[in-house]
Length: 369
Ligand code: COA
Image (cartoon, rainbow, N blue to C red; front, side, top):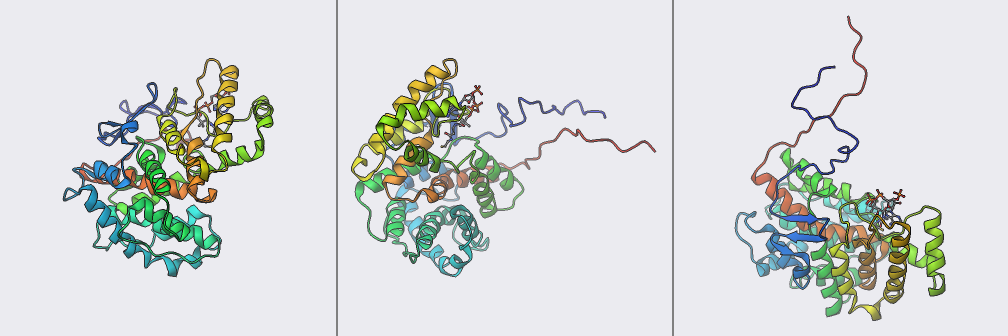
């Protein structure tokens, strides 16, 4: 078989496209060696006190037809939440045998391309409305209608619980949504850009992204951190439990990262968010002891490979403390990441070229005639 000279063969090193630059973006940059996440010129740590709407204004800047300030985004999202709520009731029954993330996928599929509300606004507004209704439906509770006057984080918690959330819970959820809103060309964001490049439209792009997020190697994982804490059970068991796990060659949940070789900056921001939630959590104090012991043991076992706390460890603690059931954690992740997905779709559409890489054929050639 002849190979075109301009086609670079995939090797084991590039099979996962590691190190390959597949897009240019002004949106975010992950510096794994320095432990930095930069969002449009700001270090993540400096965005920690921002509202989710403020972060969306930053991400969407120059990408939407009219510039939208934070308060305009807040109003537009509130109105859009009310609009998408009409879709919830007729579809909830069809989610009966689905997992929460599959149910979210189904509800997002009901967003119509013909809608006259900007699709990026509708998509961001829809996730908390759908995710809260799905979580309640699984407990036999009816959905709670949105309150357009509230911010996205406050209304998400109110629609989940049926009662207004405390200011500290809203602040913690805002911090979480900001922290996970964008993270370079991760698998789901890449998926969104590939679909956008075919001009399939924003809803198809973000639904595809959700399908990529669902996998346990991406966004389907924070629940196991709570399972690990639960399995350890008590303080006297922390060291022996972790040692046994590592001796069996198993992994400690919430530690290690493909890109970060130092501490994941998102873990620190979320750890900060837990400071005001200690009274609401079953786990935070205990989890800090588990984290300290795990880092000691991982450093002893892998002295040449830095394995640090990742974003999922503190994600689990924050989301549990503000009241989300563990099986809805991936949907809450999607509520935050939808800000990044929509921005990447808008950016791709503004300067589009069909994303169409090549593969290296390793199958047989037809027999010669
Ligand atoms: N616990 C114990 N050992 C770990 C580890 C962890 N959390 N993460 C990596 N390692 C070890 C591996 O066992 C491997 O050891 P070996 O070289 O002796 O085989 C080495 O570090 C490299 O592992 P690799 O899978 O190549 O690292 P990666 O950086 O590509 O993997 C993750 C990144 C996130 C997939 C990995 O760190 C992991 O599986 N973490 C645990 C799962 C997790 O936290 N998921 C998040 C949600 S809970």
